[in-house]
Length: 441
Figure 1 (cartoon, helix red, strand yellow):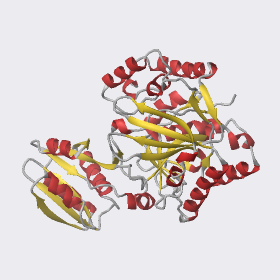
Figure 2 (cartoon, one colour):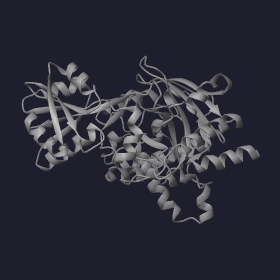
Figure 3 (cartoon, helix red, strand yellow):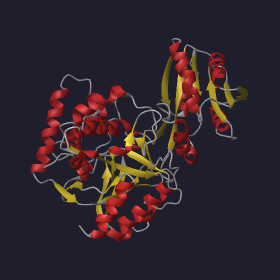
Figure 4 (cartoon, rainbow, N blue to C red):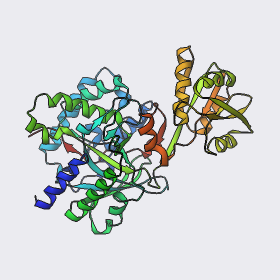
């Protein structure tokens, strides 16, 4: 390794970034069958995964290296994990992978005719991450971490020789100094892959970023973002998708760390986790609010609970769901919407308890659930309206999550309530493509 690249790697480590060695299947592998969507998608749709299984049958595929979560409760989970680990070793021993040493990957994802979404595959230092509430770590959870979701994932990862990322991590780069700057040089970079994705997943293309001048460009961008942060509360990387997978990697690393000397801890591969970084200001990155429905309740009852968590409120009626959505996304004060079988109401809050409506509403939901009410989390305005207008139900509409204030909110409020936002629909989530070794030898 050149002295210049060694220096860059040290500087990257200072801001929590590791320049990884990325594994890709060798040329000739059918990448459309190789890449499958994140394991935590289609959890209630076994038919999706059964269709994928038929499509990839007999060919190398990441389907054989992951555990779709719709199968987690099956009785053969131990056998499935053993098969995953064996297949990983077999793929390595068979020479399936080509190594791209000390490289980032610049990724372009196109899906459903929307604006392309750009990303940078890199490794992050798990030593700089803490999922605990109130954490001020450089890498931080954006939604509450549910501890019960870690053990089954840990069981899968702890003996695995490889990791494959579906984790998306956000950076707050309004000037486009990193990913956008590299995207402007894509024509100069070596193509890593270009393939359609199965099941309406669109298309993905990537370039290898391994020249010293390009890594230096990214390094300077990370350093500029880092230096612009509050030294008392630096948040450089915010989890977008896959927080529980990242937390699992952290938990496994904490176990492994206890067996290592201080010197061995410095560069052990399990200390790092491969992710795709995305700029929150990317025009192709869509933040969609996740709405709620409360059962066996009324709007007046919800408002009564809501009054405990704000100084005052103002109610405005809307004629339909479309007008309600416009109202709650207008103005500067915090708003949310309610509907039942009879009416649509916009509620404007003064001095709410949380910095965002989802946070304030979560206090309401916690109170109501404690008092015996039930809640469900709903994607889409139409579905929320349909279920919310059924007799005895209340639909709760939340405003769009602001990209401009997202990082500020995490810094001020800590991790958001679970199910606050979604980054695109299921088929738009990350597909497994790259791999990285997490075991020595």
